[in-house]
Each structure stands twice: as structure tokens, then as C-alpha cells.
Image 1 (cartoon, rainbow, N blue to C red):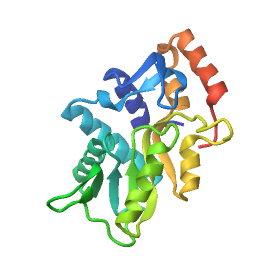
Image 2: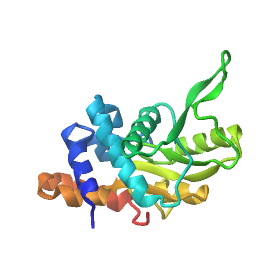
Image 3: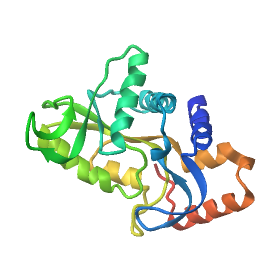
Image 4: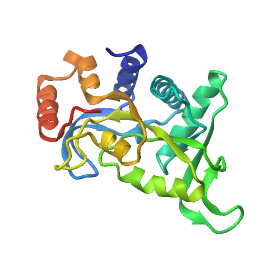
Length: 221
């Protein structure tokens, strides 16, 4: 059963054009009937709503907590800022860091900006969408090179619930979680999106999503 914040988040994504339906190609090369583009968030009000949705999902899914949020460059950078500010609204001080694409060779130098990671820090990675897990596999070595951290988990906005490869039987999100021994969560998954939108989707959209799920989908989260 969906929570209010999840239903509101689906409506919000559609309203601002982040979630669209049609003909698209994912980074992995798959032809998909829907697309989630977090680059469409473009105002302070929208980022505030997005941050609150992530904070709701984090509070629900990561009861053991974390010490720091991490946002992979580039899309993860505004995400961790928005989430940290959402927690600040709730009276909780949360620190964050993110990476540069290239190491800085002057000033303080290094790859990371924000909180200086310490031994034992529990780091929660904040991403937009995980299709194949590529960015996470690039991110974890950066974090581990900075300090002997612990991975508190990974949270994304939408779980596409599709296999990372033809050989896999798990979702890409579940697979990357198993690979790095960390819990994973999403604000919503695609089945919840479709169920909530219902008749607001055309019959053709629903049929094409169902066919895509049949071809590439996995049901384990």
C-alpha cells in the first residue's frame, strides 16, 4: 500500500515534466516507454518538494541511520543539498559531501567537497535513478579511497524494477545493493507509479509499460 508522500511524489513528477511517457532510449541502450529526467527540476520550490520526498523515504527505509549523505556528480549534488535542507526543516542537522569529476590540484585539493569523511562514517548515497548501477560502481571506490567508511545504503527517486543484465534475475537496484552489502530503497517504483496514475495513463502507455516490464523487468526489490 502506497503512502501519501509516494502518491504526492508521483503527481509532482508528472506535474513538473520529470516523468514522461513516449519513446526514449536509456543510457543502457534499451528502448523505454517512459523516462525519469531529474534534470527537469529547475526551481527552489521544486527542489524543496523533492528533498522532502527523499527525506520521507529515508526515514522510512533506513531506521539504523547514517552520518553523511553523498551525492555523485553531477545530478547527485543538488539532490544531497535538497535532502539535507529537508532534514534541517525537521530540526535534524545532516552533513553531506559530493565528488568533483576531476581532482582539484590547488587549494584544499582532492575529489570530495563538503564533509570530510572519517573512519567508520556511515554514508548514504543519494541518486536519481539506477538502471545498470554503473555510477554506484564508480562512486564506491571514491568513498573508500577517502576513508574507511561504511555504506549505510543507497536511495533513489524511482526504481525502474528492471534487470541490470539479461543474465540477472534481480533488479539493478537490488543487485548493486547485494554487490556492496548495503540496503537500497526508492521513493517509488514503477509498479507503484502505474498503479497510482491508473486511467490517467492511456491504454497504449499501460500496454507498452507492461511489455517493457515483461521483457526487462524483475520483481525482487
